[in-house]
Image (cartoon, rainbow, N blue to C red; front, side, top):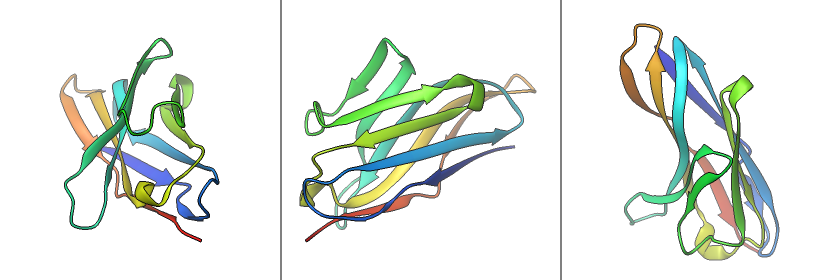
Length: 120
């Protein structure tokens, strides 16, 4: 099967920066779209950003100009650089990937989540 492992969450002060990473591993033929979602306490999960290629990215309005998504196809890894963090960015961040497996089946895979807390 396929697994996504996230890292990079933690506690940061308002205005600070964090970089999240998410690596896909397992029976992978190709990883198509990758993205980050987040879920704050008491709220539904929401899209943060997605990337298909360097020129094909999409961001939630709330993070445009502050967050940057990128990927390393050789490593099947997606990154989320978060700058100018605000308390309202506090949430569990989930990695998501659309994967074609070595059995040529398609899977939508989620990571386990990593907590980002923005607080002074």
